[in-house]
Image (cartoon, rainbow, N blue to C red; front, side, top):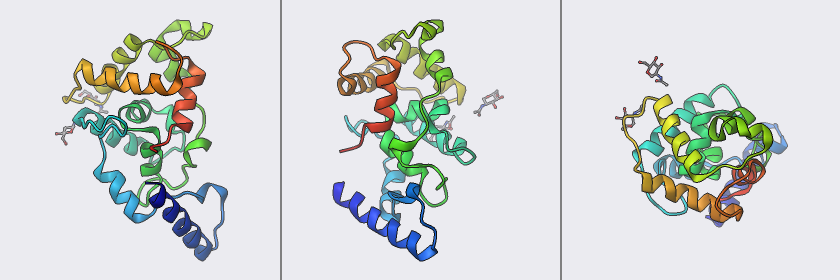
Length: 190
Ligand SMILES: *[C@@H]1O[C@H](CO)[C@@H](O)[C@H](O)[C@H]1NC(C)=O
Ligand SMILES: *[C@@H]1O[C@H](CO)[C@@H](O)[C@H](O)[C@H]1NC(C)=O
């Protein structure tokens, strides 16, 4: 994975140089091989390796949404897909040719929408309350209802997604906004 990323970075540099367009955001644009791989692995939780049709549907909806915006973490299906798949795979896949190459690299994407956070935890978001597992489970099902997904994960799968996020943030049983936002920006697949 590290090797592929390295190669893709070099190829991305070479192709941007050839096109005469050099932007910082283009630094880590994924190459064709990794793009094919990201498409193949859609719906797979990168950390537990479990696959879910529901997650794949969220990921597909996310890509549709991101055709017209670079605000990845302002789209509910993208935030949900980042948790059931991985933040890196969602950002990188959507920076592939045919998707939206204006999207910056993962650590430069705009902050998680406070509206989405509030939708997850409720009005206590204004007082800075952290997200509980139950908040996350309920919101995951709401986000699947919002895309009319008939495929749904079971409770156990959703709890696994929460567990891996919580283990990374290392914030106990709940996850505050700032740590959740960090997860979206800095949790890589390696
Ligand atoms: C979900 O279904 C409703 C009712 O049929 C429809 O209005 C809405 O556009 C659908 N949403 C999506 C994302 O397909
Ligand atoms: C979810 O994916 C399955 C398999 O591709 C498809 O049959 C179903 O219509 C999808 N649902 C939505 C809402 O995208």
